[in-house]
Image (cartoon, rainbow, N blue to C red; front, top):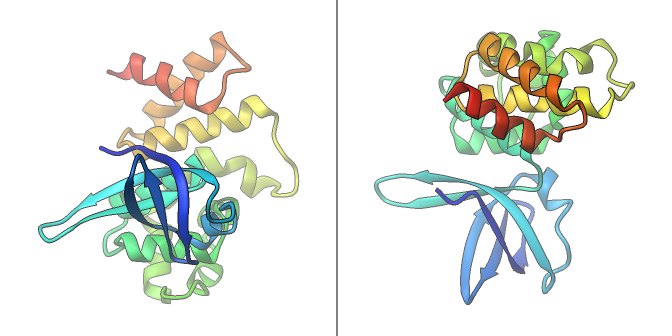
Length: 200
């Protein structure tokens, strides 16, 4: 599994980028949210990646943040009828925080406005993700304008990451609580690593 690429950005378009790593150019498909955060060509860039293996191709998808990649994986792995292209369309059409809040609030109309999605797909997304996003997005739905404490946000993001890896929400939340109890200032990556030790 290729988890990230770090190299020189050679080309960038709103839908894809080419990153040169030690003389090899990797074509990576990206959402608009990640394109907006790319440096000018010729500069060093680091993108988190998700590799999709098909009979006829190996396709890399790239993301500027872990929360984008986690949501992409959640959509592809947990929502029937949503493949990588549609998942990218979701990330391009709405930022992660607003999307999570829309799912928790069952705001089907807002999700259906995303290009490439219809009302039926939006309903399916809400139905299949609402429970999985509940804990991780509760603070966003309650008050999207108020930032949570850094530790709370890291814990919420860690729960979402574990859910994306296939753990049930209750199990993920319990493991994260255990880890966060020991280190309230821990970042998302550390919490996920320590939680996985408890779960494996």
